[in-house]
Length: 123
Image (cartoon, rainbow, N blue to C red):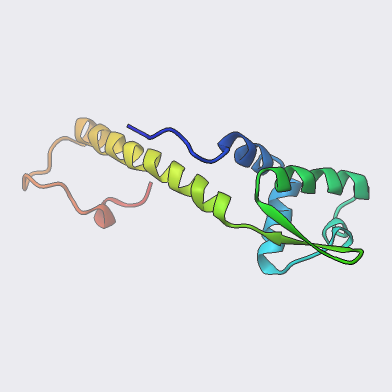
């Protein structure tokens, strides 16, 4: 059974649901940036980018450092790690389900032991 979530997964996955926001996170993984730098590759207004950044900040994925009149955005990986850990629990259940399905479809191994995962191929 998967334990109850402790992070705000709705906010995290909601923030990750838009391709511009995912791209912003990928760019922030390389280096910190301000709004103008983050907006440059997109054909959208600065207020639109600001709304995307606000959504990322609310999810805890982006942090802001203020230095006088400049605001620099930084990637905060902790919420991503929390979400990955939560998903990893489901992956274990999915792997077990796939293993059972494989046993039904293929049948038991002739040697009586299941083939190592590396020999079965990737899913």
